[in-house]
Length: 164
Image (cartoon, rainbow, N blue to C red; front, side, top):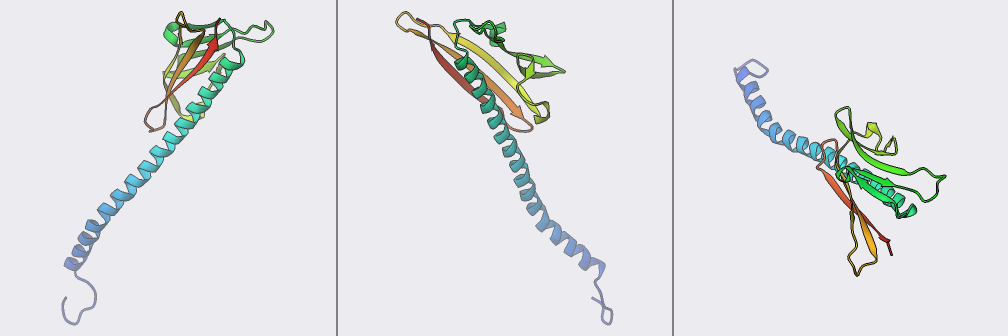
């Protein structure tokens, strides 16, 4: 610094900015990664919650309407639960593509709210037939979804019903 003058020189200012930059780049990287992980984990938690709610409702529908007339069509993408009571409406779970994205419908209603930003990767139902020495069938359902930037969440549910 020059004698008799107060203040900082351009060189001192540039050195202090360089030192501040060296310190701030790693700190901002750590903060960015922390926020990014928070939002991804938050989306993952929401995806897990919504998938569990949908799977619980589906298995409950199968259990509460346990009839011999449960059919699966279109390679497992349509699950039809025919009710024994003619007054009650049959339940149809169907994976459909609407507007370029997959939606899971329960009769004609979307299982997930559109504003939840849920993408359905897979919905598949299958009936594992009984063997000769077994008196029940297993209805197995697979549901895989993504919310926002989460990883895929895949749940598998099953219901065993007596057949004989």
